[in-house]
Image (cartoon, rainbow, N blue to C red; front, side, top):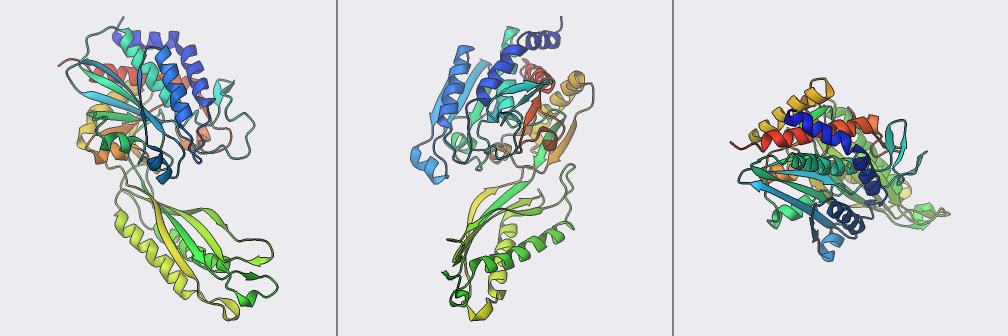
Amino acid sequence: MRPEQQLDAWIDAHFDEEVRFLQELVRVPTDTPPGNNAPHAERTAELLAAMGLSAEQHAVPASEVRAAGLQSITNLIVRRAYGPGKTIALNAHGDVVPPGEGWTHDPYGGEIVDGKMFGRATAVSKSDIASFTFAIRALESLNAKLAGGVELHVTYDEEFGGEVGPEWLLKRGLTRPDLMIAAGFSYQVVVAHNGCLQLEVTVHGDMAHAAIPDSGTDALQGATHMLNALYALNADYLKVSSSVEGITHPYLNVGQISGGTNTNVVPGKVVLKIDRRMIPEEDPAEVEAALRRTIADAAASFRPPRGGHDIRVDVKRILLARALQPLPGNQPLVEAIQKHGQAVFGESIAAVGTPLYTDVRLYAEHGIPGVIYGAGPRTVRESNAKRADEHLVLDDLKRATKVIARTLFDLLQPS
C-alpha cells in the first residue's frame, strides 16, 4: 500500500474520534467579544495530551490582553520534530464571533444532522484544529523517515486582529517556521487576501431635553450626515478592481452604531464602527487618510437645525490588518495541496484570493510563506460562517484532513 493510501486508511479508521474531538472543541464557548478564551485553550491542551500531543501553553499577560479589548488568552504550540529540515506550521484560531440570533441548533452543541455538524466555529475554524491535529497523527502513524518538523499553532485573537495571537508568538521568538498553512476551506488554496481597516468614530453633539431640542445639538443627525458621506464611497469603490482572482473591489461597512441616553433626550454622543476592506493593490496609509478626510469634511459640512452648535468628531483606529501578498516561497505548498486536493476531491483545486482577512498575513510580514487551506465548503456563505446555523459537512472535514496529511508527507521527505 502506498503512503498516501496508508494515510487515508488511518484517517478513515479514526474519523469518528476526530468528529468527537471537534464536538468537544465546539462545546467550550469562545465568543469574542468578550474574549475569555484561556478556558478553551486549557481544554484543547487536555484533549491533545490524551492523544500524546503535548502542547506548550503560552499565556498572554493580562495587561496586554486587556489592552487588546479581550479578557484572557493562552496560545498553544505543539512541536513535532522529525529531523533536520524545514518546519511547517499549521495555524487555526479558536476564537469566534458570538452566535447571534436565528439558530435552530444549539450553537455549542456540535449536533450532527444529515452528515453535517452544526455549531459556532464548526466551519471557522475549530474544524481545522481537528483536521490539522489528525493529519499530524496520521503522518506519525506511518513511522516513516521524515526531515524537518511540524508545529500546530492554536491561537485566540483572529477576530480582533491577531496582535496577541500569532503576532505575539512571532514577536517573542516562540516560533519561526519555514512554511505555514492556515485554516481555510477545502475547494481552493488561497494565496492572497484583502486587508481590513476598522475605525471607531465618535460624534459629539450637545445633549438636551427632547421638549426643547433646539437647546442642544443632535449627535445622531450629525452621524446620519456622516453615514451618507461614508456609504456614498461604495459607489466609487465599485470602479476599483483587483487583479487577484477571487477578489473584486474595496468595500465599506458600518457594522455597529451606539449612542443616546434615553428616548426623551436629544443624543449627545453617537459611536460608529467602520470596517473598510482593502484590496491587495491598495496602500493602507492612503486608505486611512482618505477615510479620515471624508469624515472631517462631513463633520465640517453638517449644519445643525435651529441654530445648534457644530458637531465634534474623534476618530480612533481599532484594527489594521494588511492584505496578504503571496510570497514566492509558497509554491511548494500550493503545488502539494493542489495535487492531493485533486486526488482526494476528484476535481482541480484553484489557487485564488479571498475578500476575507486572516492571520496568514502576520506570518507573511515576518517573511514566512503561507497559504490558506482547510476543512469547509466552496464559499463562506455555504457554511453560514458568522451567521446562524453555521455548519460543516463531515465528508469535507475527512477529505481535508487527508489532503493536509498527504501534503505534510510530501514536504517533509528527506532530500
